[in-house]
Image (cartoon, helix red, strand yellow):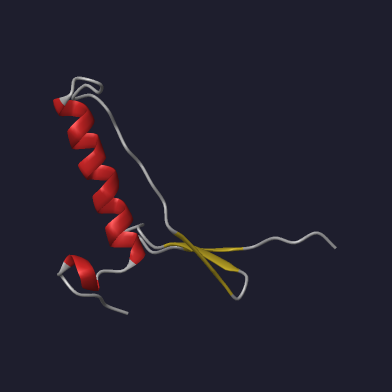
Length: 68
């Protein structure tokens, strides 16, 4: 699946990530945050009982465990 590089053609994940970093930049300029602020995130996909972090460069899947 691929999206456009234009803002109107981007999916929700690229737009959400852009909004997060735009907001962080604004807060840094306003003095609310320092340069030491760190951000981490995950985008999890669940498919056929496998969990995968779509933002993980190692692309490791994790098998879901169920009770019963």
